[in-house]
Amino acid sequence: MRRALVFGLVFLFGGVTAGVLSAQPAAPPAAAEPERAAAREARLRGMLSGVKLVGRFTIDAPPGTPVPGEKEMPREEEYTITTATKLADGDWWTMLARMRFGTVDLTLPVPVEVKWAGDTPVITLDKVTVPGLGTFSARVVLDGERYAGTWQHDAIGGHMFGRIVAAAADAAGAAQDPAATKPAEPAKP
Image (cartoon, one colour):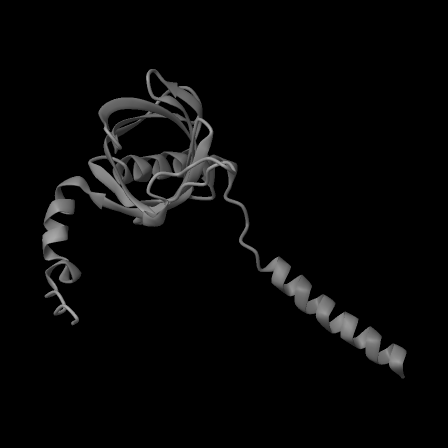
């Protein structure tokens, strides 16, 4: 009797599992792949042209390394991307980006490799040296109007996350943000 019950359960769950596995969507035909790639590249170009990445970052320093302003973590960050252009060579793109951190404020073309997790772009910066500033690496996932990832600048790295907003709308959006216009609470005695 127990064997029949065990066999029945295995058969039942095996059938359910097989049904779930067979319900997976079929891969797109090979002929549709170039069209799919062109469409996702066009979306990425639109997503990263004339925008700001506005968010926060953390610092993970090696043990014993002092981190200035550690109590203010996570700190604010902002990158303005004017254009994103796909290069003819594989997955490489050039992003004309303005970077501001500390006393640094510069705009330069940044070579990045874009990898895809399905239709989700992952910006990959791998040990790119910027003269006078150091060597940078990053892995940043772009998901709709949000981004999140990791970064490395020489020996110090951390996490980053935030929103992707239109560059022109950012200033107007901050003025219209209800939290920004909320009256301050009275001081407590």
